[in-house]
Every structure is written in C-alpha cells, then in structure tokens.
Amino acid sequence: MSYVLGIDGGGSKTICVLMDDSCKVLGRGETGPSNYQSIGIEATLQSIQSAIYNALEAAIITKSVKIDAICLGLAGVGRAADIEVIKDLVKELQNNILPINWALQPANIVICNDALIALVGGIGQPVGIVVAAGTGSIIFGRNHQGYTKRVGGWGYILGDEGSAYKIAIAGLNAALKSYDGREISTSLLEDFKQHLDLESIEDLIEVVYRREWGVKQIAALAPIVDFAAASGDIVANIIIDDAVKELVKATSTVIDAIFSVDSALEVVTTGSVWRGRCNMHGKFVASIMNNFPEVKVIFPRYEPAYGAGLLALQTAQH
Image (cartoon, rainbow, N blue to C red; front, side, top):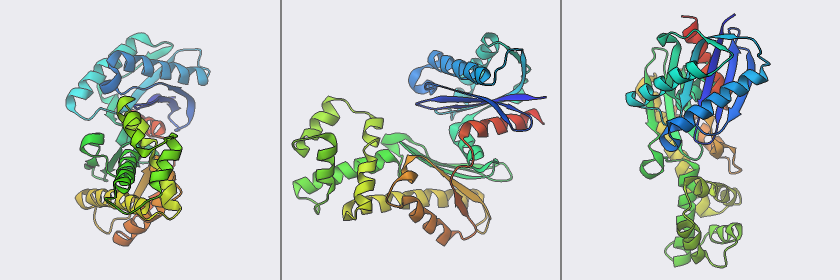
C-alpha cells in the first residue's frame, strides 16, 4: 500500500490529507495559515507539521506509515527561489514528524502554487482552468501537453480584478462619489452606513484609515455590493458586471494561450464571489459559453488538498 500527503497552504488555513493509492482519504487535518511570505518560514513549518499530525490522528495512525510522495500547494510560492525555500522545509519535516517513515525521493516531492492544486482538486485531473475569485483573484490553466498559463494573481495593489476586494473598493468609491454628487445616487451609500453603523459616510475615514483596515476587512464588504445588485441598484450592477467582464477576459486569455478555441474543456470556479445573490456565476457562465460553446463551467468536485494528494499519487506511481 502506498501513502501520500497532500497539503493546501493558504493565507488563512492549512489543510493536509493522508491518502492511499486508491485515492481514498484516510485522514484530514486543518490548522492555521502557511503563506511563508506573510508569516515567515518557521510559522509555516509549524502550521504544516500540525496539519500533518492532525491528519494522522484523524486516520487513527499508531504505527509507522511509509510516505511515498508529498505535494505542497502553497500560497506565495511562484518563483524558483520560493521552491528552494520549501524544499528545505520538507527536509525539516522529514527530521521532525513521527510516526512516519519518509520514503521520499526528490522526484516525489511536488512543490507548487495553490492555483494548481485548486485546478486538480476542482476538476479531478490536471487539465483545465481554475478561476479563483475570493479575497483576491487568479486564473490558471494547464493543457494535456503540460503547458500552463497564469493570468492575474498580482495582489490587491497591482491586480486582483474580479475579486471580493476590488468589488468592495468599487462599491465604496461609488458610495463616496454619490455622496459628493459626482455620480448618480446609489443605495450603497446607505447600505455601507447601516452595515458599519456610521452616523455619516464621512466616518469611513476613521474606519478604514485610523483603524488600519487591511485587505480582508475591506473584501468582507463585497456582499454589501452583491446584495445591492441583487436588489436592483444600477451602480452595484455595473460593478458586478465589470467584475464578470474582467474574469471572462482573463479566462479567455488562458483559453487562447494554451487551448484550441473548439476544445472541450472544463473551467472550475472557486472562491467567495461566486456564492452571491446577484447571479454573478450565471453571468460568467453565459458569457464564457457564448464565446466558447464547448467549455463547461463547474463548481469544484473536490477540495484543493485532495488535488494536492492526486498530484502526489501521480508522482508516486511514475
């Protein structure tokens, strides 16, 4: 029996699955964040170690288990230098974690960005496109020849079009412009005031700047825009439509780059923006299918950690 570990490490949590060679998940563990770019390598190591321990405990593993391969799909890992850092981290794991018999060869250690494992987990195979739109956004594709294409993923300052953060920022901008009289009136003005319990929209200054709000706090306001759009607000609907257009354009760019126009492929949508009330997902599907009739848009079949496990199994079997 062959065993592998699949690890999904993000900015808010880390998930590890222990799988056997029949693709069955024997144990699953979850801990805190493991984006080493933001929390440092030592904290990342601790999170991944804890996730592995929790997966072993959930599988009720008491004897030594031979791990033949491991895949770590981590946020913030996109350059060759990042991969070298994580290789050193794997060596630390091999020295510290019991009851595991690490039977790892260099070829059986897969280190990749979390977009790849989201693709593999979402579709169930390493071919297709993932459109991830949550706090941030990234579109990533891989074809049958192994060629990949990434669009976006540049962060909230340089990119993240179609993300919850950019939707929230656009909504806040629209509310303030409406207050100034620069743009047409929008229900977003009152919606933000009520949600944030503000006496005046001018109090946003204190909330956003003096409380030093970050990306996550602002992105959490995206549902306000979504609800306003679902309720018929013109401005909110323009914001949502613009977000859809950006995600469609990015997806089309990936299709044009590595797939044939008439390819039958699957596009998996992941992230919080797709779960809103204003039918953002439906608009995206309609636009994609209008341009690419052979493309099928789906919600994830499995979680990213399972995708990491599948990639680990693939390397163990070669």
